[in-house]
Length: 472
Ligand code: GDG
Picture (tube, rainbow, N blue to C red):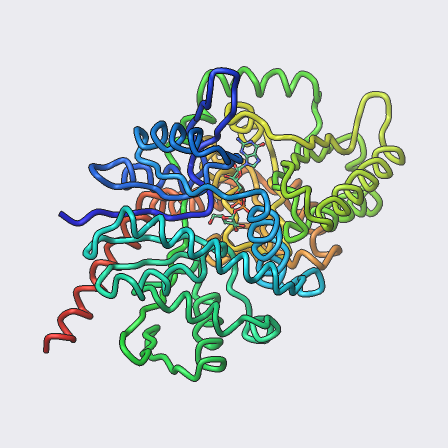
């Protein structure tokens, strides 16, 4: 019987070292939810780094055994690998380049070598578990070389690859000293998925210009095989967000927040700390709103959640300082005893409180300068069970390709952002509901379970087609 292996940098678990040993809790990300039914099915497994440093062989054996019971197989990374492969090549070379922040990218040969070595390590881990006929679904930018490494060892395997971040224009890829190797790595897959057609076209153009391989209808002909590229916009577990927002617990939390905030309108902003998310630009736009439209002073507050992330990378620490300063300056200038323009939290909230914030917010301000998809936009939509609320969304988030009924803005155009905020705060309830109903229909239909199914069905189909062509 053939099995399916999911492979990603991180396993869908949060681990902790305690005095008694290790404890593991499931993590609630959308990927984990969407793929839950796949990797927990008979014989299937999720391969990845467990998120903590475990160097002792006896401890590694213990962790491996614990995770095996939850259908997971750990790949252990050393401190040096975390520094050079993860913080180095993945987050200081690929992440900035793929998000059009080339000026932040570093090009270190040692980081590249660690990237190759860790991809090889993942390859060995998968080969230990996978048979020749198995399906392997590899995820994201940390593992771009893995599909081809697997293909070399398992020519018959069915291999899928999905990229969760944007694929940039060829002009960005050609700046990378290792661009061609990365593309060849991805082409080891049978099916390569992106959030949008735009990313897919960028990939095909890079493959044509850097490798000289033309494509037709998303199909690339390599010397030996046909590789298919396509768009699969990722969704969320719609039902879970809708239920959480309607729950008694969320109602209670929302009531407490409302009492504390008084009658002010609420604009919500939720992100991981990242320069791609446009957080500083958003703060400047909010400041300009208060300047340009003084009637909103005392009547609207920005609730800004920033989840700590990658603080070992220099730009993230600098961005944190910039945000702290902006919030301090705006609050110092505009607040009064009864009202604060910005409520800023630099920490992660439990899911129940997040649901209450989605429920409470009048406006969600989702304005990344680049974002593969952006699931926060979709979670806000699913949480609006009374269909009131307005989504302001950057046209440079992958989600904008689907969510045409949001107020779409260019995040670098501060003036446009201010006008969108003003419009959203004034929007009549009927218009809010018409827009929200259309958005909900879409997000509900293409949820994360549909996404998983579409990708895996397409992968099976493309493999069958290839085999038929080969035997014809
Ligand atoms: C990458 C791509 C793509 C946020 N704050 C809290 C919290 N969150 C959760 C949100 C949401 C997730 O984190 C963030 O997802 P995004 O999609 O917005 O962004 P990335 O983390 O950058 O993800 C992105 C995604 O992959 C999937 O392909 O959409 O473009 O960059 O689910 O709810 N969760 C909790 N507390 C918080 O304070 N519990």
